[in-house]
Image 1 (cartoon, helix red, strand yellow):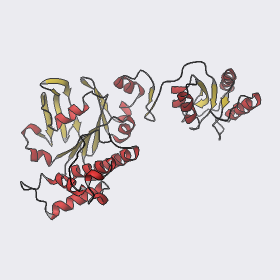
Image 2: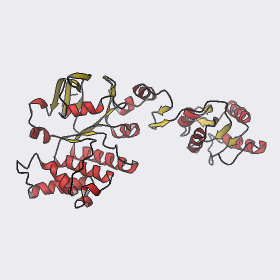
Image 3: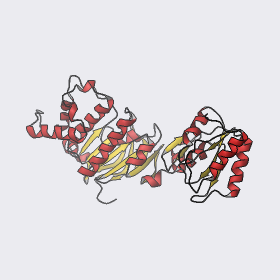
Image 4: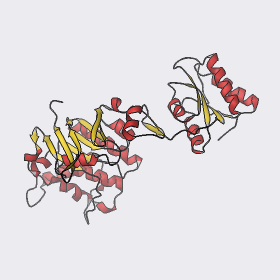
Length: 367
């Protein structure tokens, strides 16, 4: 990739002179989020810590703005690259704005005295990450989500071109995970930053990243845009998934299906059956589902969890043949549940299945 702001050339990283991963070639542009994914212990943090010079390189070169980082001073690097790692920071007796202010160290000289312009940068950074209201609060007394925004403000306060983040959402609940990634996306767009990070939440990595790097044991595996990386086969191979499944379209994972002869037939569609499928799976009850079009919201979950599935081609009315197969499967179950409430011309025969279940006394109200 030409014009890359951060680049690695044949990098080897590891510990005590022993390489863990070799031949690492990354190329990160400004205005781009690159995310490392992979199993725990695969070396994602080792790569990041080596790039930011917390670990000594075993081999290769890291270039920052076209210059080899090995020949740059700490201050030169700090003016271009900032870091947010997973280590919990516990400064004593510091307000949040004081923590953010430490990000001005590349510009304050030996005495570390902030000018009025420096304090403007501090408060601007806190505004940018929606943390302005925390300025006077004790850093040790704010929540994990607030603390992470403050630390991100500190990284932004350095006025870097690149931010490196190691598992930035690790300690956050879902609301604060989404907020943090939304803030990162906004900063990348507004300030033309380059972001290099690791994430273990695949659904977030799929949605937030411009480019994804698979760290796989002692090597770098597939690399590319999310739509190329997040396929069921690739993710299963990367993480060694043997039980359960990953659905590339939604970025969701499902536990393994309950094997056995289906005991309940679920008449779903349009997303109505998903909670029923998962409830049956949790209770260890094998079930069948249908009739579902292959482009229906219910289909990937039913395909992962159902012991029997009757499907129809997308955008086609349910055929007589498909209806008969569903009818036979429902009869073999002897029980049916119908969370489906609304139908259209494509799946109106599912209402006939419901009526049949009522007539036969198979329909139960809830699971």
